Each structure stands twice: as structure tokens, then as C-alpha cells.
Image (cartoon, rainbow, N blue to C red; front, side, top):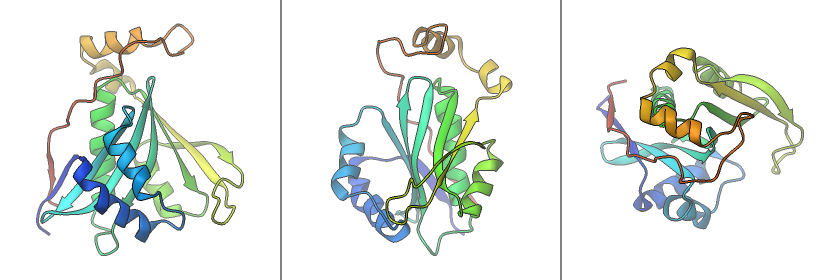
Length: 192
């Protein structure tokens, strides 16, 4: 397979992300919600995977204090089982941990074992359940968390570590101030 490029999403990706939402989820986000995420929500950060100029997958995250709340991860049918979702998740975690996000969380359908297995590869563990979370069918969601490793924390630059410390008090609560840096990650290529 030709290279897959993983890059930060831009407003022009709204239609492609919306199309993937419609295909992949029984209760998809609206086009306006996606447009808002990409154009207005200062806490939203999205990555897309491109293959031959076509957006084939994406991942969204909300930056809240030192936490990253993963909103959605999706790959177009026909491009699955090519490690595209794995690549997007890897880039998202590397970039956001490097910017000071120490904890990542997400909800996943209890019966979505393929997704659960994928998240577990990155150190996510089930830490709770939201009963009846999915409006479409009332299915439960597992709440999964990933906490930065000691090695990841040690690798933070002094500037990032100081910025993260300034945003939390002794109990881990948020202190007002500028938002975390949302630097454009490097373009990543995957040959898988």
C-alpha cells in the first residue's frame, strides 16, 4: 500500500470527516458539529489519515487540563485492518503527551472488542462503565483511561513540564491561564 500521511485536520476536512462519521457510526455527529470542532472549539484537536490525497480516517480529542478526552476514532471501510487507526492513535498520543497531556480517556461500546483490543495496545485500561450511554441502542460504554508512563513524563521538555505544572494545583485541578500549546505535529508517514 502507498504511504499514509497523518496530519492535523483543517476546516477543509469537514466534509470528509462527516462522511466517515455517517458510514461508521449509527449516531453520527452532524456536519455543523464537526465544522465547529475544526473551526471554533479551541480545546479540540483532530488528526486525519490521508491515502493518495483522500481522507481515510480521523481521530478527535478535547484538551482539558492535563487530560485528553478522545471523542471519536474512525477509518473508512475498505481501509480497515491496515493499521491506520493504530497509526493515528500513536501520533495523537505522542504529540499530546509531548505537549503536556498526561492522561487520555475515551468511551467504547462494551461489545466492540476490536476497538478495546486496539486501545489496550496503547496502555488503556477499563476504569468504569457508563450504563445506557449510547442513545441509539442504550448500550453501555466502557470508560478507558491511559496514564503517561514514567518514561514519557521524564521525556517532557522543561518548558512543557513547567507549563503543565502551572496549570494544575496540588490536587490536579485546573488553574486558569492560557490553553495548552496546540502545535502542528510533524507529518507522519506509514508504510503499513
